[in-house]
Image (cartoon, rainbow, N blue to C red; front, side, top):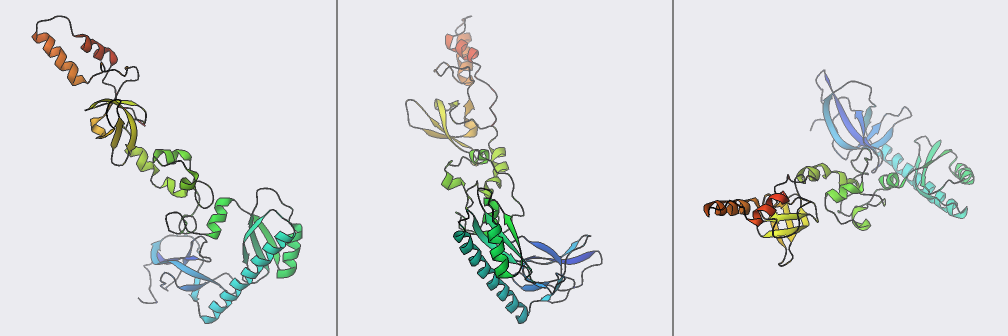
Amino acid sequence: MSDLHAPFPSERNVVGVKYAPTGRTITLDSGTLVFRRGEAVVVDDRRGGTVATVCEPTTARKGTGTLGRILRRADPRDLARAQEEQRREADALGFARSRARALRLPIKVFRVDVDHGGDRALVCFSSEKRVDFRDLIRDLSARLHARIEMRQVGVRDEAKLVGGIGSCGRELCCSTFLPHFAPVSIKMAKNQRLVLNPTKVAGQCGRLKCCLMYEDAQYVEAGKGLPKVGKQVQTPEGIGRVDDLDILSRKVRVSFMDRPPATFDASEVRLLDAKSPATPAAVAREDVDEIEDATKAAGSSTPAPAAENAEESGDDPEPEST
């Protein structure tokens, strides 16, 4: 791949970079340079440049507006400077944690970011209450010789900044590709027929997993027309009660009073009217037609009682949508 590529006049080369493995992706103008994923680059910060890692390779895009720019590929000196800054941040994090314990502050310090120039440090922490950390700021300022900014974040932001491995075996969505947090409700787990166990539906942050929203719309659409669990339905084997649903396969598991449960396709199951009694009198429409035909053939002007009960039960309702 060539290191130089001139885009069309209406396009420009852009690349996505991250300053930290768990940070957000920043789109920058790469000029005529082409970068591959994983390369270290120097980003123009008007103070000598900051080392970042390419997470989205160079692509030509149309667009207007001002973007930051990449100066060059990182050389050994840039990488050595970046390693020194990482070591300084690790030392600052250890000192901040030790001082917080010594001061008996009910906070959890999990990240310290030191500016490239070293004149400003951002300390991220989580706490369930308001904390007076003026003594901690004084100690950190004396140790780092920098202006200290304390930032309190929630548990979801903490998981995003710290990173980790989810129950699926992959890195956390929030620390890899999710640009922002979207609302997640317990109804999404119910729509997908998941076991409502906190260890199953909660993520590393202790809140509902963000991935619950990925397929929620698909499950809602696929579940339309299916009977709810616990409803009485008419099946080819008689009347039963819905025991479980396989939404994506559109399968309905029905339990009976006098025989083992059976699984049917959704097209074979018909929801009974709520006013219909759970008795054999609530028969299928086909059975009613057969009874009426047999009555007419016998020359009787009075319909059979079973047919009357079936007509009163209203056994041909519209399927109930969920």
